[in-house]
Length: 138
Ligand SMILES: [Zn+2]
Ligand SMILES: [Zn+2]
Ligand SMILES: [Zn+2]
Image (cartoon, rainbow, N blue to C red):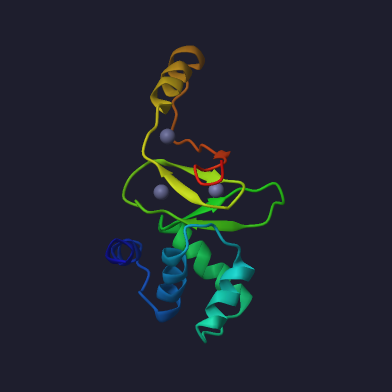
């Protein structure tokens, strides 16, 4: 929880009970969740937050690098917890159990080099979407 509170502070977001409750939900689950499910889980904790507020909180936590947006074919918004928000890295999403795992590896440098050399461009950022089946689901 400590590092997430630090990330909130760094992004000038107050550590409100609602934001902490959302964080707590993600800390307990390894899986990615949609806003509806997050709202249900908040209600189970007797915290009644309207859906627009849930969307806002999730977006704020995503902007702070605490949550990652998970792209799915149904085009709905889903979020998963990033367990190392202080570092540039990627995520492996299990399409079977919705688990989100940290991928502390990136060889994008080679692609950036290719672009600089062949397209004479300069890469500023990259997104990598990796999905498959996790070890438990295989
Ligand atoms: Zn992460
Ligand atoms: Zn899985
Ligand atoms: Zn990368």
